[in-house]
Length: 178
Image (cartoon, rainbow, N blue to C red; front, side):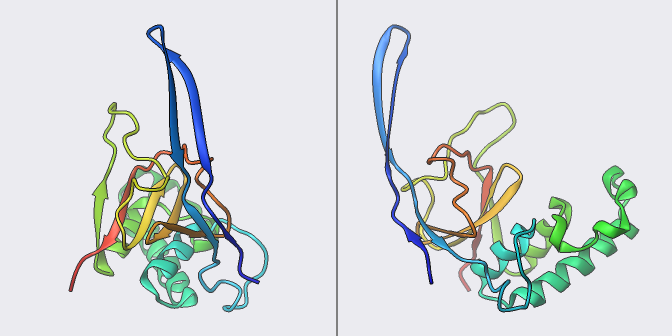
């Protein structure tokens, strides 16, 4: 059974500088999608959002991406001079327990995606995970401690990470035209 949830209307009421305000915005539609994890033979939930998001947005096989990310993580841990690479534990080389940005950023760029930052240090949140704030197309979206896939304005993930359309988007990867 495929779960599809229509985006909800959200209303924010408040007072700023003595003036009352009312903001209305719509959340994104949500499509439950594990990116092929179950078809690859895996069960349960885990921290593999990087593999799921890449598999969904790129259309590649989940297991192929999982294995490539795991290999890239091991290579990064052994060869990188970054402080967190030197402290990384070999048992965490698997893509199942999360992936460092140093690893997945290069991998996603190698698949033909382009990184578009939407937030800078000290700037504040400009783009949210809500309807109309992201472009159309196949996107891999970076939010706090998570990657998710957005396809033509529909979130594709195992759960809705939008936090009622208030979650800030740090940036996104978009497939470059061939």
